[in-house]
Structure formats: structure tokens, C-alpha cells
Amino acid sequence: MTTGSAYSEDDPRRLLSSTRELAQRVRKEQRATWFPLLVFAAVTFAAIPILRYSGRHLGPCTATGPGLKVCTVYPNAQFVYWPIALVLAYTAIAAFYIHRSRALGIETRVRPYAVAGIIIAVVLTGAALWLAHTAPLRMSTVTWNLVPQLVTGGSVLLLGGIGFALAQRPLRSPLP
Image (cartoon, rainbow, N blue to C red):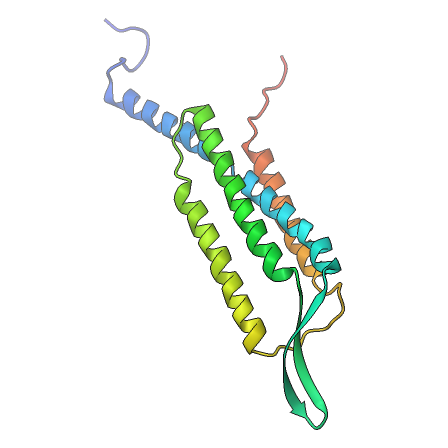
């Protein structure tokens, strides 16, 4: 006797199909790529006024010719803002994923990514400090120089975050 379907409840093909569907649903629920992108966009946009209105620091200078020299000039807040902002961003992202995991009942590995992000932020800050104090660079003292780079980077992050958020939303079925 058949029950009207091609597969019985214990059929291996049906079990495999159900397992695949469940795995796909879990992976989809774990993804929230939009959140980190939006956090990093906010951090980038917040850097604009902070770096613009902070004072400037004159670093080491090197003579380039008779009466000429090249000096390193950088915003005072640059080496304070970025490490603090990035550590807070990674902490917020980790908290979001932990909260989301608990709410969905699906475990997500968060710690390795957060720790790696924080380590990268600290190492890059150290490298930037070392370069600023050892290698003279030709930098303009015009205070709006960083704005186009920050606006471009922040916009890409913001658009990516919005795109992923829209892509993750469940599609609404049309009304009958």
C-alpha cells in the first residue's frame, strides 16, 4: 500500500532532502552580513567630523633640498579614534550575533571573528603610528583631504549593508 506520496517518511531520499533544506534555512538565518557593513559604515561616517575638526600633529621631517623639507602631518584624533571605534564596532557586532543566535536557537561562532578584528585594529594602529613617527610622508595640511576617501568607503559599506539587508528579507507572496 502507498500513502499517496512517492516517498515514505523513512525514505533516505526524503530524509536527505529534509536535511539539506534544514541546513539551508540554518545558514540563511545565521547570515546577517548587513549588520557589520552598516556598523562599519557608521564608524566611517563618524570619522569625518572627528578627523576634520581635530588638531594636526607635525611628525618627523626630512630635508629634500636646499631650504626644502617634507614633513608628516596627521590628525591628532586619527590614532585614538580608529582603534577605539573599531574595537567598539567589533564588540557591537559580536553582541548582535550572540543575541541573534540565542533568539533563533542556532549557534554561531562569533568569538574568532571578533578577536581577529580587534587584533587587526590594534596591529594596524601600531603600524600606522610607527610609520607616522619614522617615515616622512608628503601629506597636505588641508583638513578636508580625507573626506572623499571616507565618504566613498562609507557609501560602499552603507550600500552593501542595505543590499544584504534587502536580500535577506523574506520575499512576500503576492496577494490572491
